[in-house]
Image (cartoon, rainbow, N blue to C red; front, side, top):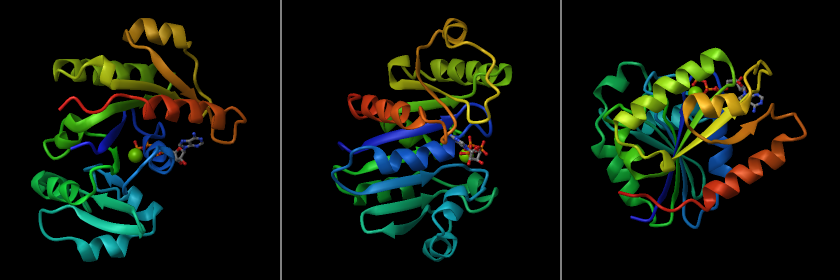
Length: 218
Ligand SMILES: Nc1ncnc2c1ncn2[C@@H]1O[C@H](COP(=O)(O)OP(=O)(O)OP(=O)(O)O)[C@@H](O)[C@H]1O
Ligand SMILES: [Mg+2]
């Protein structure tokens, strides 16, 4: 399968992971369908609300299966969990079937705050890049350290991780070089508030770097 899968993982809550996923699915190059997956198993329904698809997703849902609805031709939204309890009974077989029904060239962007959940693992193993997002604060770096260490223990090579600092709230107090030294990882980009004039050029460069990333190792 040559589908391009990108997982976005917020290391700390509220750092802009879901927002970034919606931007990436629009901007990364795709030669087939674009699929964005809400793999937030807490049932917050962020993408259903964002794309105004709550009813369509409810109608397409069957027990234990991931729901899929269409934003427009060639642009789909998958939702793994409508409720918190849904997140506990999901299996990965239905989402693999959905991936199998997409074209070979589809782009898949996954909002995956719980990357170690069994349901989410098929996306993580297929990902060309796992984008870890955090903020340059003490809490943000502490949370990123825990996540990156867990990824290391899970055997995810650091070459498959793009580490992104997002400082939409402008509370960042820690320097990039200190963060790189502490976490032993290169910062791929520092994303400012989206109204900051540097946002567009920073985001464009980040997208270009992701687009050039080699394919999945699985
Ligand atoms: N670059 C940005 N500039 C300005 N505001 C942003 C930016 N990124 C995210 N936000 C805002 O920050 C808030 C949190 O964003 P978002 O829900 O995407 O974060 P998250 O990491 O997915 O949170 P959660 O932990 O709840 O999943 C939202 O109100 C969103 O509009
Ligand atoms: Mg989110």
